[in-house]
Length: 134
Picture 1: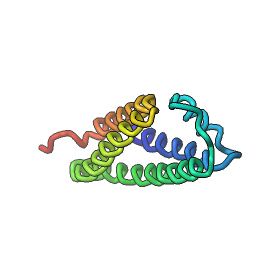
Picture 2: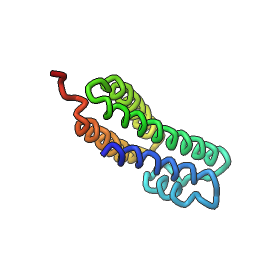
Picture 3: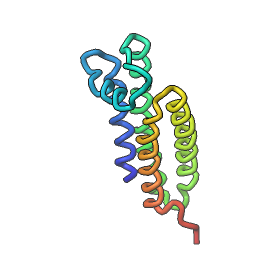
């Protein structure tokens, strides 16, 4: 489940990064339309720049998370601090992203955000990192 979680972040990054160019912005347009914001997205230079940067950040985040989580799983109980770090990052992202999504009129973004947190939680529980040390 954790691999699927990391992969979904990376794939979403690819969708966002694709929005940087007119030739590849179809999936990003579909996402923005599905989120039913306050109006149609204007794919101007600032939006394309923002999508490109956020796509790159999301791809980088997914690669880093995959490697950190893989190491946390390999360490077993000794990897708890890595899980704590990833969880702190997830909580920070979730609160900020969800709040800003609602405040900017894209409240439907809460649905994939909750799904992403759910996948993370399932992966965390499945890793047994929460199991008390004997």
